[in-house]
Image (cartoon, rainbow, N blue to C red; front, top):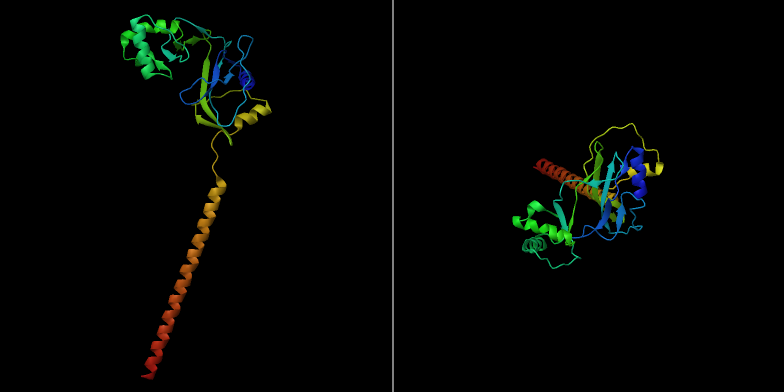
Length: 244
C-alpha cells in the first residue's frame, strides 16, 4: 500500500509526507498495533502488515508538492491524548488536577485544551507531557510556498472486500497528468461500497409476481362464474313467463 501511495503521488508531481501512519483501530483504540506507513525511508520503517477479515483501519494519506519533510515551528500543540501505558507521580497540584479531569472525561480519545473545565489546570499540562502521561499532536509545517493535502477514511475489511465506513470530501480538480500503471488504475476504479443482495431481491420480486398472477386468475374465474349464474337466472325467468 505504501508503494501504491508513492507511485500515485509521483504521477501527479507530489510526494508523500514522512512520519505519517495509518493505524488499525477498534473501540476506544485509535492507534492499534498494525500500522501502514505513508512513506518509507531509512529513518522511517515499520513491520509488514497482513490484513485480516473483520479489521478496521484509519487510512491517513498526506501528500505535498514539497519534499515531504515536515517540521515544528512556533505554534504550541492544543490537542493531546492520554498515554494509558505510562505512569508517574505528578508533583504540581495543577498537573494532578488537570490529569484527574483527563482520566475522568478523556480516558482514551484525543481532546482539545479548550474543552478542559479547569482552566488553571492547563498550567499542569507541561509536566504531564514531560513525563509521557500525555502525547501532544504537534502542528507541522512544510517549506514555505508548498501545498499539503490530507485525505482520511475509515476502512473495514469484510468477506466481500474493503468498504469505506467514513469518507473524505474530494474537491473537483482538473489535471493534465494521467496515471499509466494499469494495476493501479484497476485498484483505484474498484468499488468500496457495500453491494446489494440482488439475488434475494429478484427472488422476492418473482414470488410477488407469481402471487399477483394467481390472484388475478382467481378474480377472473370468479367473474365468469357470476356471469354464468346471471344468464341461468335470466333463462329460468323467461321459461316461467312462457308457461304463464
